[in-house]
Length: 366
Picture 1 (tube, rainbow, N blue to C red):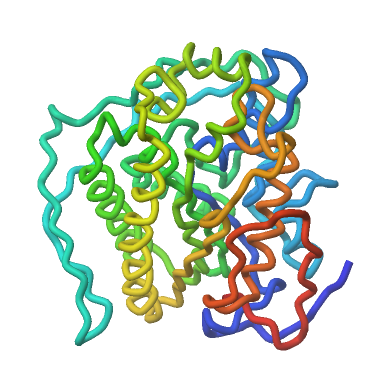
Picture 2: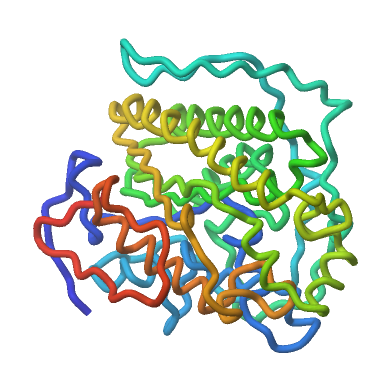
């Protein structure tokens, strides 16, 4: 183990790995580690949160908290163990949205008109897999600060944020430097044909802005990784008969793989995730500037923007959709390396497992 000893930083732009004490995530089933291991049909329906790339703390597995711990971080709030999928997104509150503009600086503005959504017209999540109930879990199972919800869309981010705040308080993280990773949007894209193309974009951007506002209002001392959206439709090329049956049974990713699959999903999704990212980038830039006063830094981490699937080992054997254990270790590697790269050099794809970056004395998180 390498331990670097530095004076406690006063500025979020001067953070080193050893300065991070607490971890947290907001996300969906990818962050929950759904089906990343395959043992049996029953075990395939588990969430392996202890091995999730961004928050897992189990020894012997490449995750962000474990990598930080090699440089002196106590990895408080990391998650451990596995459990049968337990969440129903239908029980969580959702948000409505209205018109607004994104101001990047005093002279630059990106206008984005959002219509108020009628709650009675909100599209219900099309996946009948939820709710499910806990049947069995590992003897050691600590979700801790992995508040991700399998099946979640961006409308559940405020619920997850409020839950994460409670967890950070339980771990006495208020004054500590924290690393928060937000990865949400795959399910928004997966149901674009049900909620509408423009509504998918509008709702996502509005919900992310609400989340950023609440993070700044409620807390301090946070380095926030915002994982940009990606081409979910790439997984369609790696399906087999078994995985196709799963998608039909639970209507997983309905507009791309499930019962509402559209004929032009590949073209639409490629345009959709790029359109979302074109608005997400200036939004993150805006709140990074605002958050500075409370030592909160927002950074886009494009770890999957140009992601390709090179063989079936990247995917779960249950549904050929979620990342496998290897896929999670790959994502942990990309995110770790990106934390030490400037925006123009950040990695967006990894055709093979790259060597881990070894931070030096002049390496700050970015």
